Amino acid sequence: AQSVAQPEDQVNVAEGNPLTVKCTYSVSGNPYLFWYVQYPNRGLQFLLKYITGDNLVKGSYGFEAEFNKSQTSFHLKKPSALVSDSALYFCAVRDALSGGYNKLIFGAGTRLAVHP
Amino acid sequence: EPEVTQTPSHQVTQMGQEVILRCVPISNHLYFYWYRQILGQKVEFLVSFYNNEISEKSEIFDDQFSVERPDGSNFTLKIRSTKLEDSAMYFCASSDPGQGYHEQFFGPGTRLTVL
Image 1 (spheres, helix red, strand yellow):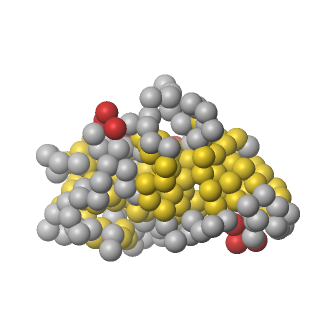
Image 2: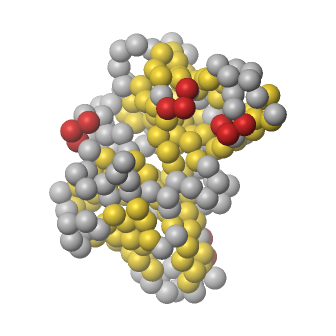
Image 3: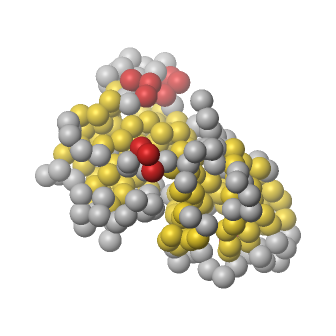
């Protein structure tokens, strides 16, 4: 069965410091991996995705994520955090073998708090 | 930039009443989805829809739920007889097969409160 784990409920970081939000996944085939961000009272905004190719993918707002197949991880990173990055972050996975319209499986979400 | 829109933003209803949540997906997208997020919990898949039929549905999507694309632009989720546990944020999403990997674009959500 497909699953996503985000082991941290909350991540606290000082503005200007690097941030990491962790995600591990489980799928039967090759994974398609996604990160979404949710601001208060807003929908889910797409940040970045890994499909194939380079393990380091870059996305919106300076975020990047590293796919690690051996560790089944897809951690979200940013070199220098901003207070405006404070939000709820969701990792999601889709099994590449499961067809073109398959559901996304989401993690529980990690709340990122960046303090000045 | 095109976006998915949803109406209403907040719906309050009495238990047992029918509700219809509306979504306008991005115009050239062909795959449509509903997800829900109970307060404080993870986002859960409900149903996917393609070519005017349900492609996949979760165990949550029982006979009380239905989806429809009544015209070329709207995509609706109907709950026939709402229960207290249906209270949640409902997200509509759409994706474009031309992108190859079905990145899903989400609407802002409808908060459903069942009293």
